[in-house]
Length: 265
Ligand code: UDP
Image 1 (tube, rainbow, N blue to C red):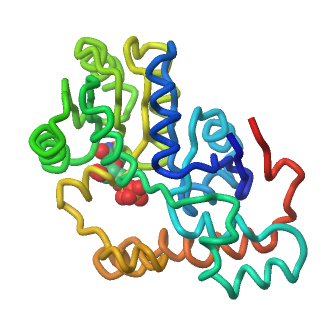
Image 2 (image 1 turned 135 degrees about the horizontal axis):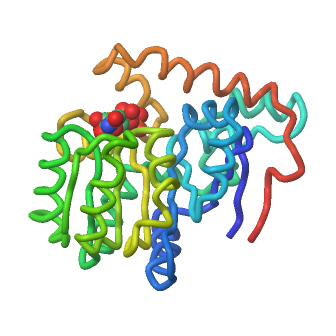
């Protein structure tokens, strides 16, 4: 599988369908497979936190959650290439080394369709988001949801939550604690989650699927303007959004690409 790094974070060059194919394989293998969905904000966090960067890069599958990742994955070597990238976001679909944007929410929906027969556990988010997501998965996608918990990611709740997941026999675990907490939680428990084959951190996906938060209209998503919609409906996120929209590209522009930016495994 080809991959490409952005600010030191590895992204596997896969479409949603190809990601599902890779996940198929994970269910046939032993042990827990960590799936991550980094976005520009997560890349910035990883850029200033080596441990988190190593954790993301140790994942079994890493998909690009955001147009910004595809766009800036093109930036490459040299001032003029960077300048060209800056002014041609509309060429991203053709020129990016990453073939598609695979958001956590979209991937979760496709996973629920494909793996509806697997034993699924939903961890995190608010009581309302978690319960509504549970009902949606069961009623719309006919999923075999064997358990859910809104228990906190703190160490005091850890044993109780792990116990619930193990007793449920869950093979597929969706963790909605936000980054980096969800990846750190999965990594901390990867050896004690007995039946889980795939664990994925999906950020605010339960909030979107349950309708607690509205997702940007499709056309805004396609144009890379989901951030603008989110800014309008959640103005308190302004700092996070400015990071993703301005700080992330400026850091990528200033960064010298390394020889390991493209690799194949
Ligand atoms: N969350 C949680 N427990 C926590 C912290 C966060 O369940 O201790 C949930 C929160 O309710 C939300 C999700 O984690 O549903 C993350 O949302 P965020 O908006 O940070 O994710 P993003 O959409 O940016 O990926």
